Length: 322
Image (cartoon, rainbow, N blue to C red; front, side):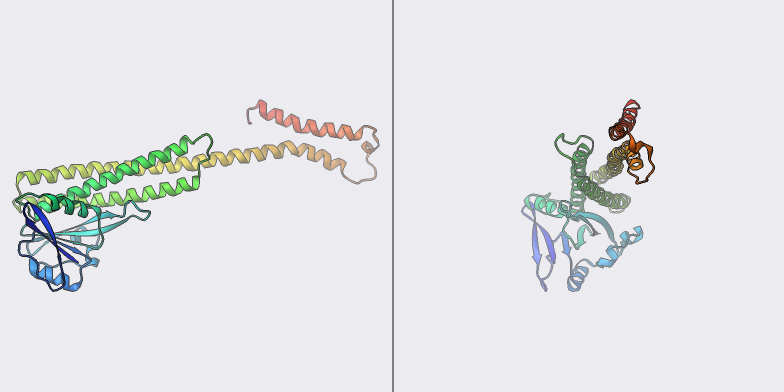
């Protein structure tokens, strides 16, 4: 599917390009979503560039993600998708700048694209171009990453409260806590991966700004976004460390509770062992056992078993082992 964005009356109008329909002459942004081979060729002829395939976009080498070809600048970044669902994913998105026109190639629908589409559909600069649209997209991606990290931080605080300050009348489900920490850790790692790729893209863009003769304001905006990416990457690392700490703390709490239960059974076994020994001795069926002829042998054995149980218990209490 191809969407073409054309400036019109102070807005950027989105046009759906049907198969066989020519691209508008004054389009500043061509957005390709899961394009077919025919759609790739149409855009290639229109812009005079080659459109990378999905396999090429998934390459992880920097030289395969950030490069120049026939005067066009190819920049592939990893963006977040479905971050609010139980199965967040990352997806590669390629930005192609050619003669102040922007082409984007993607196979998923990251939220920043909808945000920028709605924003430019309401109002845009009279001097809108592919360069400015790309800056808006990158800015929206960074803002979206910040929002996701803020949400993760708030949810991790709730998990921390569940571990260290559980409700008095509720026993925390450590199985659910473990799953929650795993999900937050996975989401944080994906956000960090996205931020690292955006940081590399911005560094490439900053180096190319002079060649593309960008205005000072645009170069300053790139530098500002670079600083934002660095700070967000540091924050993502902090959240990852916090997730690791909470995971270790939760496992420590579980071990303490298990040890307390095992200690109860151990004490019970030690307390009951002497009475069991006395009962075992006098429960034997040997013919010659002098104590069996005692008149008060039975109550004496009961008293001995009680003392054998009480004395170890009192010893444990005096040692503060209980």
